[in-house]
Amino acid sequence: MPFTPYHFGPSGFVGLLLRRWVDVPVFAAANVLIDIEVLADARFEPGWPVHQLWHFHTLLIGGLAGAVFGLAIYYLKPLRFLCEKSMSLLGLPGRASWHSMMLAGLLGAWLHVLIDSFYHYDVQLFWPYPFNAAGTWLSGATDLSRP
Image (cartoon, rainbow, N blue to C red; front, side):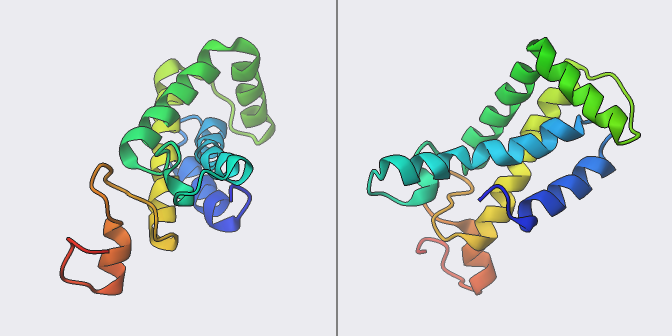
């Protein structure tokens, strides 16, 4: 879920490391955005694996959703102002640009997907490839054609 430390810890750390190139609030919010899929699955209960409802937990669709999210935050001026204000309150002032927010959304979503691929068996990192490559790698399996 989005409020767990293994998402906010790494996303905050990586976001602050890359703060010259990415918008930190969008980077952290993109991590939360990806878990909307899990919340929707809990609400609608379609009957298939939790992380495969809209394929937000893939590098392809998740990255696209994160990049669009970053651009949407940029073009909605009150939200952009909120991001800039939150950064100045942290002592990291700066002006947000469309490419820093888009890149923050993309990289934030990718980081979330990458972290979840190690924890959840049903994350298809390289969708449409049907298996969890990270989980298979961690388990020490040599045959990647089977989960």
